[in-house]
Image (cartoon, rainbow, N blue to C red):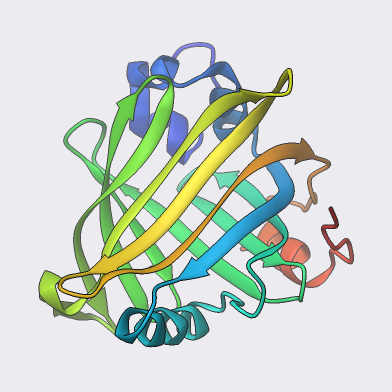
Amino acid sequence: MPGLPHNAATHWFGPAFERLHPLLQALHRDGGALAGEIDLRTGTGPAGVLGRRLARRLGIPTDRARRGFRVDIVHEPERMLWLRRFDDGSELRSVFQPVGRFPDGHWLEATGPVRMRLSVDLGDGGWRWRLLGLSARGLPLPRFLFPRTDAYKRIERIDGEERYRFAVSFSWFPFGELLRYEGALHAVPAVTASTAAPAGAANVAAHCSAQRVTS
């Protein structure tokens, strides 16, 4: 797209990149870091058991309903790196690789052994992921064997300040919602690393950042 630095996100969205809110454009053009407090909850009964099990596998702490959170987003020419850190030191890392172009293309998100195929819906300046398929350790999985995932991000004005509102939820019929975490984050100084080193930014953000998010 003319006038924009080339990275995986700007290239994949093409002209549709301008449909994102300017703050989301900046985040996915230049990268950055967001932090704040988030709310976490699991379901009740069997849904709670499954939700806590899923959270453990993802590295999401569920011992408190509210806690500090930080995400560093690093852009490279061929992929995006998302490094999520909770205030107890737990980490959730994802690598996103683009396939094709918007609106018919998709992203491949690798989180541990799970790989999800995701399309993107745009609306009101925001970005919502839509799950198309998934695999574990290279083997395709039927959709009914995996919880339904709903994830979005948008910009909201709260107390006169524009915040990055996001939510991620997992639900599974007939149990209902298993796990959800969400928050309204603000921009903070990002961890930097040389783009010449493979996954350098990811390693620096994950292993060298001593900052913990507090309220």
